Image 1 (spheres, rainbow over the protein chains, first blue to last red):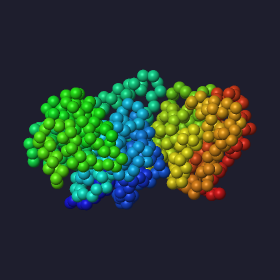
Image 2 (tube, helix red, strand yellow; image 1 turned 45 degrees about the vertical axis):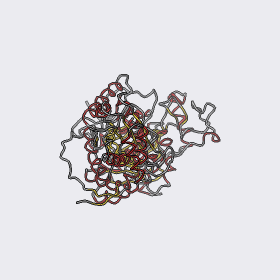
Image 3 (cartoon, chains in turn yellow, green; image 1 turned 180 degrees about the horizontal axis):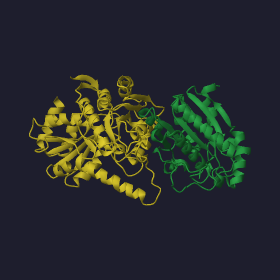
Image 4 (cartoon, rainbow over the protein chains, first blue to last red; image 1 turned 180 degrees about the vertical axis):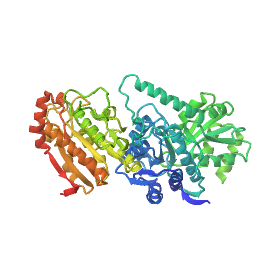
Length: 363
Length: 248
């Protein structure tokens, strides 16, 4: 049965259906539908809802419930996610599974409350101190928000790692039909490391402190090996009309929705535009970008930022073709016309692209 | 032959990293004695903070979790919600609980979290070589108050029990010290009362323990114990500050 829900509510309900019973949050726009929904639904399913005194406390409560073996989640928006970075680093260092939702808003500082993708660097490069990554999933609809939150809990448990859902104000607040999937049957490793009281076994200690020389390097080698495994097995992306494309757009989330419109328009003409939409921002879909960089005239990265993911696209393309960027910041959302203009600018002698622009402008 | 004194089972054989004359070993032993005597090792979960007390998990043979600096009350809250019938306690120093973690302890008390908080107050940052703590006494010399703490520049020592007592959510608050065998016995009784408060689901309990740090107080062990009795206890009066049995 389909229900009309905001992306934020879809995230909350999917978490509950995935077995999340411990939610800790702090109000911040534009993710308030999520915390409000949890305050109603968690008591209904016998779960825990706490409105924490701060973002730092909320992520620390997540730390506790994860250490105790529970499925747990917190959510916030950009300035709040900055505050949570301390906790996320400790969760990564303690190898604790949890899900964190970031419904991005404009920054830096207090910024504004409209959609933005300016937290990309923070999300995919670790965010807090130390050598680590979290898995980063980027939904581009309310339905995909539900699906990815669902998967996020399994991925978190499978790899004992925090998983970040990177949405934005549009994805969080748009209202779309959502259908919830049944509980996954994936067999996950037992949580024999969890703190349950040392009954009939040796004590379990959850920690990230390795003061004896050599131990921390050993732990980091283990962590990096795990991350390499995630890079190998968990890359996800959506490819739209890439195989005959002259230019491929690279975009995620809200930007990708607009890029899809450009792809659709372009296919009425000889000039072909394709789209690679990373669903996992970390691990980043490097292979497909590298492969396609050999075949197209150029790549164009479209973001609601001053140019962040474009750096990873350039690293993936390894100089095989030019990588261009178009972005808007501070709550600005690129339009399909702006993107087509940019395409004409980067392939100036192409008559078909110019015709596309002329027709788009008339419309 | 009858053993009249031995190492509690819950205390491991790990060599101590604490400095000579430090009070932490005494408190950890008292906790281990209670866990043994009450047979609660299987259902007790401890929280270690950042500071000298972080390695508590090396000495106690129970499930334990490390928390970021100041965050044990929030992390403990997350654990207790998963295991409401387990006994959850934090083991925190003064920098952790009364400086960087002030918000977390106040709000844990305000929610009336049914957790036992063990607060070791030695009026100094031992782990980082003796800087001022929020509980450093007026005129006390530390690495960052070389001329002594003056209220104008550095504020006043924070009395945590009194601060938390005004919150409706706190149930049992007592301040004790390690300055003599008699005071150590009182400390054990206070810890027992704290755990009892939690087992009987009476809510938030905190035991503040005045503890010596002779190395960074620049004193010998005897002088440090005297300093607790003659100086520290004047700023931080010993006794029950709040008790759910006789709510005052």
